[in-house]
Image (cartoon, rainbow, N blue to C red; front, top):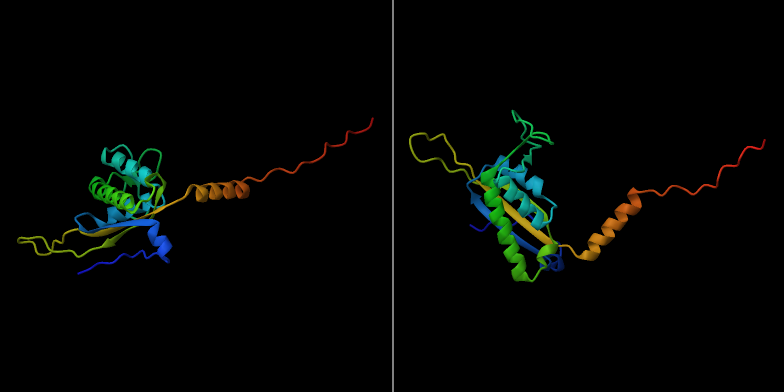
Length: 178
């Protein structure tokens, strides 16, 4: 059974500037995978790898937005956890997509995660006497694209021109005559 990608580039030019990887039926919780993927979306590949390594070492918690029921707050943020097992599998996928990008000849320092999603996989039953217990499985797909230096500089210059308004130059107020 062939599983396609949910992300489809619009043109062949976009396809040549991106690299993809997919993890099929990974033995990880979908809920935790959704939160980790949401946290990594639109980050640079190097930064995402660093974040996941810190999550595995229990240094940086992942903020939870969607699944926050009975979840404790972490210092300097809201509710969060250290999802170690999903982080290990997603880190492996990010390293795979980095290798795919190198093979395609993309500039690895300029890679940004443009698409990362967790999808529900089939849930086979555990072996044994408890037939109602289902295994946790998730599909995860990652797409990175090369962001050129000119795109970054134009976007940052447009943000500064929109965001910061220069105060108008007013003439000095006239002094009151005595």
